[in-house]
Image 1: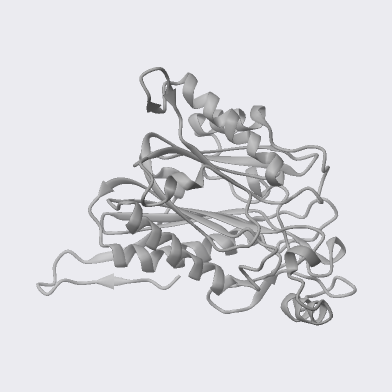
Image 2: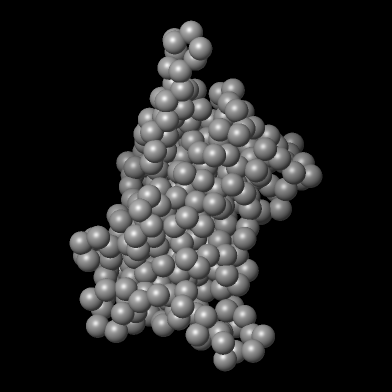
Length: 345
């Protein structure tokens, strides 16, 4: 990522953009749980004191919970957790487990009769990687929350949590795809902290944000290098008339990201942050936002620091692109699939 320095007119108080760790954000807890044998898992991003949040869904096939709460006209000003999981729509059960866990700790929206944790969730499709019969459930959702409160794996990346069964480059099916995973990247500029946690389960190929070089995706016939996923999809759809990818592809694909910041932004402003963060997808995933993807980006803030919205908007795209790249690079080969690491990329 390009380094930025800003010097005021008097030559004092130089601001520098520096890399920090997403898991160290004050007021945010990150945890994971997974079933490595069956290639699925979930990740919980928790704000015990609440976080203001928005979401921008660009893919044509999302599986989600409570995202309507994040619309600017919705009454809820803060939510308490965002859960990312495998299992497609079946994995939404993990969010129920997260809500139960938080309720037991007195975290939630006070209704007068009970505190109701406001938990949003999005899922990737990983049913074709391990066992389609094993999906994240309440127990796994609770386990991810417990891990978040322990702080034991807040910096984990790769084959962990919702990234356990993540794969990329699927135009020709499972025989040509590669293993991906979960990645995180964060920076600080003055008092503003902003970072992204990405689960990369894209239909398309993954490219380095700086050089434009392909680092993961659809393999060629002998698995020694890459083929072009986008070109393959164009050829495939040329004979499908008006049928879209959601109907033509036997499986679904999704890249999910949570952009986190401490900037004091409201839901409408965070909507702009989430929308801009999709530019990070455009820089690193090709093709992206297809009808066979459920691509979604949350933007959430603890609202602890005064910050410039335009700076946050610009940095959101950068940290998202870096998190996508890290998700590909941190993945280990698994389930008979090669990864960026195993190919020495």
